[in-house]
Image 1 (cartoon, rainbow, N blue to C red):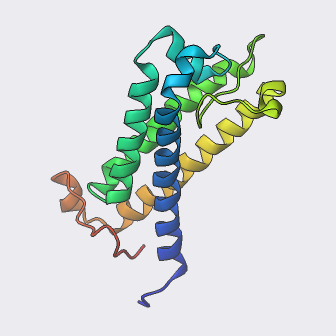
Image 2: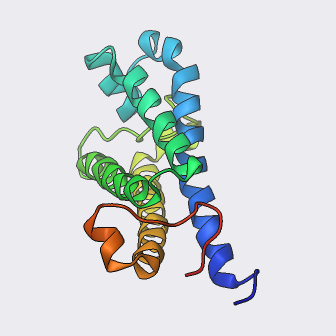
Length: 169
């Protein structure tokens, strides 16, 4: 098999997309943590942070940790499985706001709300759902490639023996 292939490129691109998105979202939330306490709860994330003071800091830490875990390649199968579960949970939280009378933008990338997003929370939340579906789809693609490569014995002992950066799908 050739060293370069479209499948390898898609696999690596999906990993970078998912890991990078979680890292950027977590870093932005951790930097904005101080401001979100004083701001009015104009996004869903800021609202959750105002009701539970440690929520924003914990969410930022969890997203940074997940992004680093995904980027490291350690237990690749399980890290992407966790990413699918987390994006599913985020999607569920955003979907509760879509039909709400007082809908708030999700605040997926921090509590700063631009004018457009504040004026169109429904569309902003739909874009948040689309982003989560894209991230879950990329993680499911990685899981599918890893499942195809892993031997049945490796899965039985709960190990996927794939080196993180060398892969053939």
